[in-house]
Amino acid sequence: MKYNWSIIGHEKQLKLIESDILSENISHAYLLAGPNSVGKNTVAKKLAGILQCSNDFCHACPTCLQIEKGVHLDTIEMIDDKESIKIDDVRKMIERCNMTRQSNYKIFLIQTIERMTTDAANSFLKMLEEPPERTIFILTTNNVRAVLPTIISRVRVMNFALVSAGYLERKLREMYSECDEDTIKKVGLFSLGKTGKAVNLMENPDELANYIKIYSDVIFFLEHKNITERFSYVSDLVEDETKIDTFVTILSNVLRSKILDGENAYEHIDTVLKIDEAMTLIKKNVNLKLVLENLMLSLK
Image (cartoon, rainbow, N blue to C red; front, side, top):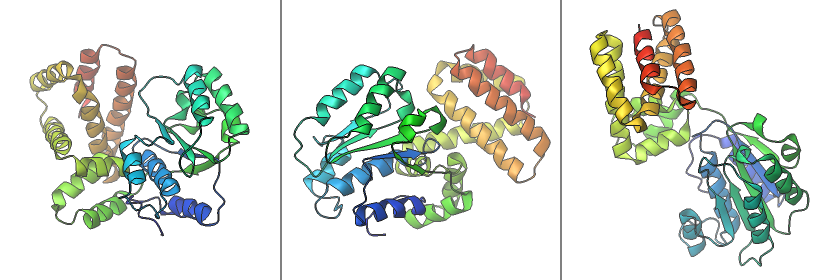
């Protein structure tokens, strides 16, 4: 490919984007759709860099550096802050659209577009129907079914999927040749085909160390049935809720890996279903301690 994307996987999608650029057939709006942590937001930001940089996405000029830091005046980011995107947010976007641009394009990067309220989505739709000249919207979604069909019909949809464990591990070995094999395999397990997650763990040693510690805890509880120790661990988790999602995710990933290996598959499938149920209850703010204790009791 022409540009230095520094992305694991998604070669087909990146080639299609490059084809649009080289053939000068750039869409006024792209929707990058797929699971979270597969690299959609990274691709969106790099695409903005390619379009704005006058030196073939050099990664070194003021434009590239400003976009990377999120401070480029004509590249506006709406980062997913877990809040809904309201009509006032879209009105502010329209105002920015109408301001004089200083760059190649006016680019809007909008994460998790399904966060838009109905009023906001309808207002945004009007902007999509009649976009200002040299204005590009690069949108992402974790759930394309939650996006208004009328919006989907006015954008170029590019689907991003999980990659295989073997492919991910091979790419990690190429990118991080100094890293030991055990760490590569653990990151592959923790990421479960999510390339963005894998790179984030490789680039953040403290977070990776936390994952490895929790992974060791998961393995211990799968090998030891002591309910007192399990419940004590639950109490610690409830005291530090930031670790709950990581614990439940790693537990699920470990058991799914055992299922793929054919190890007590039926027992593990039953537990994975209970984990999925527990994750749903946790998101609904049901009593965390009770949910986690019941989950610990379900471990075979």
